[in-house]
Image 1 (tube, one colour):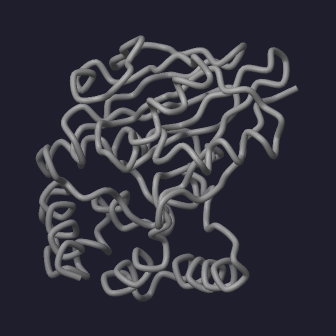
Image 2 (cartoon, rainbow, N blue to C red):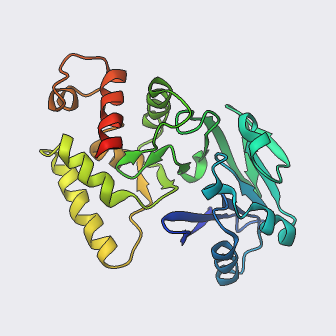
Amino acid sequence: MSAQTRLFMCRSDNFGVLLHDPKTGATAAIDAPEAAPIELALQQTGWKLTDILVTHHHADHTDGIMALKAKWKCRVTAPAAEADKIPGVDATVKEGDKVKVGTLIGNVIETPGHTLGHIVYWFHADNLLFAADNLFSVGCGRVIEGTMDQMWSSMQKMNDLPDETKVFCGHEYTASNIKFALSVDKGNAALLARASEAAKQLAGGQPTIPTTIGEEKKVNPFLRAAEASIAANLGMAGKPANEVFAELRERKNKF
């Protein structure tokens, strides 16, 4: 039996995700935005929380850790570079390390930019990427602590993952991301189709994720900063991809 996931909302727009190994019963929460929705998801599935896999230190991803740990005695794994800013950490990880949730094995990829120590978890055998605030559906995280060049390098790491990889991100930002993407890539047929699909999903009260790496390569301007058409649309024909990415991110900040 392969990995199972449970997706639900936390706070105002955070996605909560549980990752479950049916072979052993182990279950991980990807981040802990708040305890109550995670507890509800555990109750609904009958799963028992064994792990919390933390991506970065921001409070909207860590506020629920201590309440969950107090109840479940679960193991908290966090990025080594930010462990001093995250409560209840039991284990730290860095680029190239692996994490286990029962028999499920995930690779740790360092993705600085949003925060300096941000990491994502890629469960290769299960085609799952938990990207938090690095790669969003049709977008990317705001560059807060790192540099634009760091974030562009992180985007390239995502671009190198297999197309079939399912992407679970940290927030429901798809609608606003699509509006921005259309402002810089309005002739993109795949993006127009994604816009229609997302509108139907949201109108039906459904989440717009998971998406896939392959889909994002078609519609996400932040992954496509090296493409000549994106540079041309920005009036930056011939400019290096990192400069095009920086311009995209600055425009999104003001959008």
